[in-house]
Amino acid sequence: MGTVLVVCGATASGKTAFAVRMAQRLKSEVVSADCMLVYKGLNIGTAKPSEEERGGIVHHLMDVADPSESFSVSDYERLALPVCKRLLGQGKVPVVCGGTGFYIQALLFARRQGGVGADPVLREKYERLAREQGKEALHDLLASVDADSAEKLHPNDVRRVVRALEIYELTGRKKSEQDDGFVPRFPYLAVAFDFPREELYARADARVDEMLAAGLVDEVHMLSERVKEDSQCLQGIGYKEVVEYLNGNCSYSTMRDVIKQNTRNYAKRQITFFKKLPGIVWLDPKADDNEKKVEEMLCRIQKN
Image 1: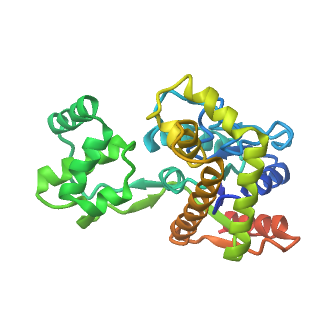
Image 2: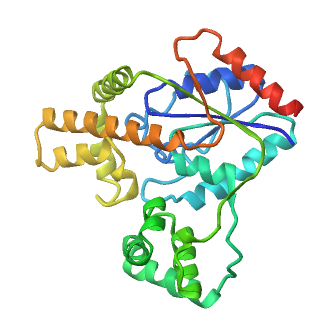
Image 3: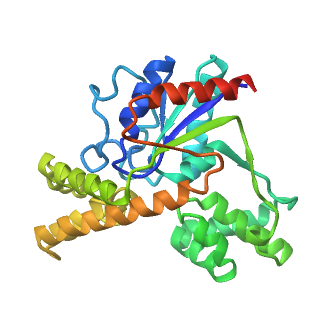
């Protein structure tokens, strides 16, 4: 079986450009793993790569959802997994690129469900609750009985939230206490750039300034006229803060500073998440031979 290359890590760490260079080198395609790039029309605040920045490489899982829609981890898995399998079947190395850890986790690993069978009646009960009372209410219910599982699952990942509740009701035990585990779907090499923290934060701040100069406020204003304020796409960093500014709840400078702080906090959480990804290789961003090193590592994995 072939190998999947994952270019992950913190925001503003140069993932996109490196993934394009690797895809060009490997004659392959990029599979985006970013929960905001899935939305059509969200270009500035997501740092969506332009056609020029894509370097002639096909990019998947961008612009696949309307801004009015919710898009879950399960939706990502459903769309991205067949793309990776097709590329592997063609003898190519899929280049997965992004910073949404739960997307990458869902793509790389299948869950082993601890031997607890499914109960269609229970599933329908919880799915109906999500439809009638909302995803947050379902997630809150899980948090009340299994806080550890709730912390690991996003409210939009209804399928897995329902599964955790199902396991608890069937067994009386928390899903987090049972041996579910993750089973790798295929061999992979995950790499990320290891920037000094202050340098990474400076890069993130500079990106925010670039987004604002490029017209982020106008982008959010036009978007807010099309979708409800509580839409999932407007909860992303850069979007929710601009909404607050447009609603007159803060000054422009406060909005800018809050976006920067939230972006830095997100980068920190991303680093913490990816440090737990088995086998991840941290690259020196100043090295000029990273592409060669990664290609050599891929060759070693494929020979084993």
